Amino acid sequence: MKKITYKIKRSILRIRHNVFVKLRGLTSNQEDAVHDVIRLIAPVGITEQLIRVGSNNDGGYLIPLSTHRQDALISPGVSSNSSFEISFADQGTKCFLFDASVSGPSMTHNNIEFHKKFWGVKSSNDTIDAVEWLSENINEKERNALQMDIEGAEYDIIRHMPVNTLNMFNLIIIEIHGFQKILKPKCTEGVVDFFKKITQNHKVVHFHPNNNIGPVRYRGIDIIDCFELTLVRNNYPYFSEAAGSFKLHSLDMPCVPEEAEVSPNWDQVK
Image (cartoon, rainbow, N blue to C red; front, top):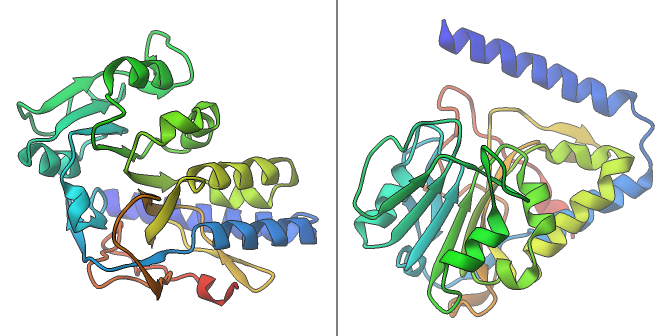
């Protein structure tokens, strides 16, 4: 019954997304914005291997081998899967988890510290000021990683985060939600600015679409609504001259196992 419910939900969302694109009076401004973002997040080549960390499907991510060694991992958005964080904790990384929607991580570990709070731009009963907490608890001179899956709140969090705060992370894994809103004229500039900010001092080394919702086609380009990015800071020592690609990696696995993977045609954007 649960699988049937998910399928119905995904079908409704796909219909809504397609109708949204067809009915709106879209202009070339949105087309340019989509192309700009695709260029910003085009993966670059690296000389070391990617490894899969975490679960086989949703909750697992690909990262460069050397970045699995961190002093601290900050992970807002825990839900019921903490396999990614456990993998780091097993390596000796101090992991800080944040999520007000659960009572705690799915597994306990001596290197995991859980906060029953959502990340926010200010503190309240169920939120914690992300920038303030980072400035008080994280040493910017150490190796720090950020893994963020907060269901669309990433736009507001990053918008309020100073660049020097974002730059304390040598590794960023972030799940992007609601990317199709770039096609809404009132949202276009803000979405583009978000991607400019997260790529100012970091480069994307891996891209993976979430197959929960399929893409819509807009002016010949697939617009996916949700995808995962792995970024490393510009001082990462293993960049190569080889071109990267939006194509699926051999270690990629579908977020929704019963659905086919999504492979957008973004490599055609130059």
